[in-house]
Length: 526
Image (cartoon, rainbow, N blue to C red; front, side, top):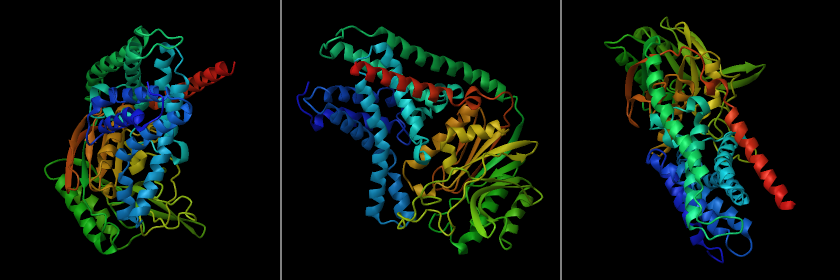
């Protein structure tokens, strides 16, 4: 072991971060997630053996892992701010680095907790290490507006067999299993190769941790096999409708140009008419703000949008900005409107989870030099809450862009009666980065968590249809104009355990982690 701290001590942690990043889309080497944390754990073991300043070395190693991982997975922020926010490239990079540094605090806290409890028995650690990671992921999804991007569980989105437990424990349950397997591998390696320390039995294989992780993984696989059959059979009996998803591929540089608005409407009208050719389409989904004017107020172009539903003979769910007055103060909303076949607006949903710097600028008196990405409109106001839109005897739960990242919003919509989820988004400001692929994977987990069909319409892609087992039945390419149709079922039967009770796993991991840390702290003081 090393007597001083050096860059080579952190190298396994950096390798770990690269492996974990590669497990997510678009690289999609999802198998790497099951071993990606092992080098990090080894790196933390190594840095503890230096002389003096152990805590500092642990924190720096955790930050190195975090910054490498998040640089590889959220670098697209620069593209969004520079190309569409009007922020100079140097400032954009600076803001992105600050964001990455903040996100890296969570892996740093994890590293401290990991090392602080290293004297615990392997039996306790096989539960504590996954619990601490999941607890910190959950906190990251809520603190400071929340950013639950690239959670460990999302790495398995392209493997239906391994994500079926999401209807029990959500994406966090998948992450817990992944961390348990990594922890078992680490503990087995540590027992065989680590230098014997006081209170440990070098060379003794920790059977219990291996058994626990094998049990969790085995349950995941068996539950997946059984569920793919049973849920698939149940879904086949649901009431079906023919639905279409339109992708207009409107360039972000002209999306809000008033002179281009008429052409935008014509593109989506044409795609809608194409969708109903030779099929009995009942519902057509247009993307977020695909109507780049106030649909409920505009007298010139709104009739063309409303008339498109009548021409197609199908209801159209479309995104559009909206405003209402609170006294003399205008309140702006990012909304979704349902247009009936009679050409009238039959329902509206206002987005409740807004994107910082995308739809409003937090601390705008300090960050006055930053423009929000949605130009030409004042800061948006959050809507009143998840409220499905009535449709054809049922209801549609709408998730607008960033909302699809948050499991609780989708769950609240389903609890309110939604039998179908529609994700409408404009991922145009992501460009050709990894973000559109990673954003799409969030919708896959929402489908499994709620056992519901998801129709996803994105301006520039990726659009698609996802069944309640997380299988992508139809999908578009990036930056193409396209329309796809598919038969989708309207959810029936009882709510899933996770939809009904989304809080037990995060609560247990937070409480268990806190109790273990307090126990170790008190024991050290004693």
